[in-house]
Image (cartoon, rainbow, N blue to C red; front, side, top):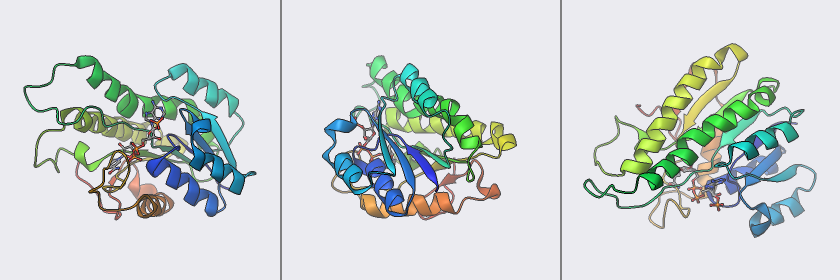
Length: 232
Ligand SMILES: NC(=O)c1ccc[n+]([C@@H]2O[C@H](COP(=O)([O-])OP(=O)(O)OC[C@H]3O[C@@H](n4cnc5c(N)ncnc54)[C@H](OP(=O)(O)O)[C@@H]3O)[C@@H](O)[C@H]2O)c1
């Protein structure tokens, strides 16, 4: 049986990724800051009592990440999916950037936490059959795709995680681990808002298809939801 560990599964894309992998027969370690507070996660446990394990994890807490990795030390994790993310304050235009701590918090969650999660679980991924790490980035983190400016905080946090992903894809190649940046599309979630283009179900379907199809040549690629490459 294949196993995935996904962060930020209590709502949005993470919840749907967990649901679809469970329906496909996977074992899923679903992490969330407060899993007990999510009715959707509890319902999923009722449907998949033997294959879904919930774990409390705030990815801002480095010690908690290490503790969970120790608790799951004997596991084999085929897909490690870093999904948890925050947008941070909206509408911060040039001239209005004043709150340094808020920007740093977005970096902590979007750019640094994925690195800490990768480091903590690398042994579990290395001993699995599939050995894949997918990190939810965003097209707005692309320099090549930035034609509209703005979005300083979120854009820079995703550009930073892209740099993390690229380096990890090189550093983990000797261990046979494939690390990629995944854009989930513009998705109807709390973050994506009501004008987004696709549902969480469509996004998770595409993300799972892209993870499933990864080969050697995809190492360190920035992959759009339709499978095409996004420029850095
Ligand atoms: N929606 C889009 O259009 C879109 C586009 C591009 C990229 N993305 C990326 O896709 C990923 C998922 O986005 P989404 O749209 O599903 O967002 P969402 O609906 O806002 O959900 C975000 C998830 O991340 C979790 N999270 C936030 N901070 C956390 C922390 N410190 N520790 C653990 N979990 C934390 C949230 O948990 P809580 O409920 O505890 O806050 C929630 O489960 C993010 O990385 C996002 O940047 C989304």
